[in-house]
Amino acid sequence: MNIKLTILFLTLVITFGCTVEFIPEFNEEKPFLVVDGMITDQNEPYRINVSWSYPLNSSQEYNPVYGFTVYVTDDSGNLYSFTDTGGGIYVSDPESFRGVPGRKYVLHLEDNSHSYESESMELIQVPPVDSLYAEVEDNELYHPGQVTRGYQVYADTRDPADRCRFFRWEFEETWEFKIPWDYFKIVNRVCWKSAVSDNINIKTTSAFAGSSVSRQPIHFITTETDRLTRKYSLLLKQYSLNEKEFIYWDNLRKTTEEVGGLYDIVPSSVSSNIICTDDPSNKVLGYFRVSSVATRRMFIEDVRMRFPDFYAACPFDTILVNQYDSVVHRYVYILREYSNVPPDRYYYILSFKQACADCTLSGSGTKPDYWDQPDAQTIYNSLSDEKQN
Image (cartoon, rainbow, N blue to C red; front, side, top):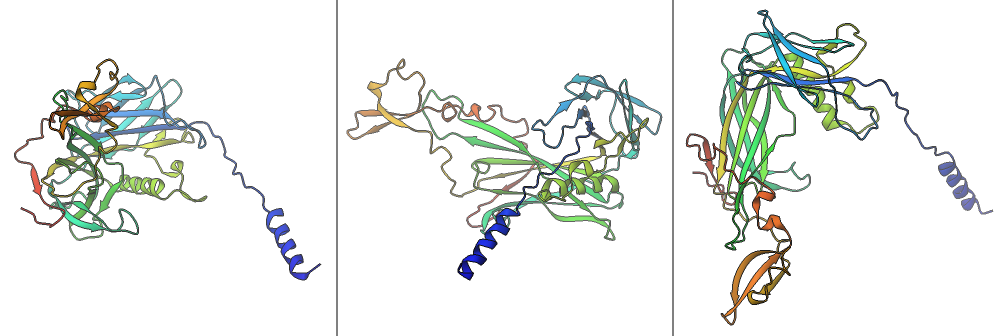
């Protein structure tokens, strides 16, 4: 046999004959108790979510528990009970319980089998948000390998008392949008959409002489969505953390953003501050959080920029007005009436999609009560020329 063919044959045998599929074995332990809840200094009901974990290879996401007694105690001897509202959700009474900066709180959970207790967590006063602003930038990370133009939202804060050294930020965004069709029977043309942040944004000032944060990135907004077409609002929530909770969020961030390899961190490796007091080997997942909260809102409007046609898929046909039959076309929506040459010929633009003729199918028709808030910081800016008023 030709020596080259022999080498090729042996290479193929070694390559394919010695390949064995690796199927990792999972140790199917008993479910862990999962606890998530936060106490703040805001006048609102606080929620404690309690559930059981699912095995790693399960497709289910939430398995609520029932029959727990849940309460919080503080270092002044007060006890605050939480009401079981069903689905593993326990809620406090805002009339009788509001977190106080400087106090320490402990979460307690009890059922017929076990008792659980959190570490004592101090509610640290958070400083106000000094400023919340947006700048036009060319972002090279939003879509790796290309430049994306948009607004980068930043926040500045400082604590003159140097008491708060660990911070976390969340935001709620709301934007006004308008469907472009103007047929007189279209009632709901202007609506509002909302979304909340889904990333972990934390920072510590412990390595600096003073507790000051400057130009902390909050959110990047582009013209790829309809967020900036009319008016946009971002409500920033700034939380105080202690060092242990900061470490928890940092580990959780690594879990959610960096998992992918065989030996990466798995969720059960993120330490909790809750233990089973009668059986410490009974592991608990999740965290009991205690934070002070500072908020600030800003608006962006008058963005003079070209946007994609978000309603390009709406029209499917045109028809002469005198050929329209309300029975035949009962599942069709009229978007617009227009005239053509000769001018006495009138047409309807039609769509099968109800959301193209009613914005409440994709948003809310109720204007937020803060929408015309006069003292909120507003940015009038153009993405095209960067001119800011």
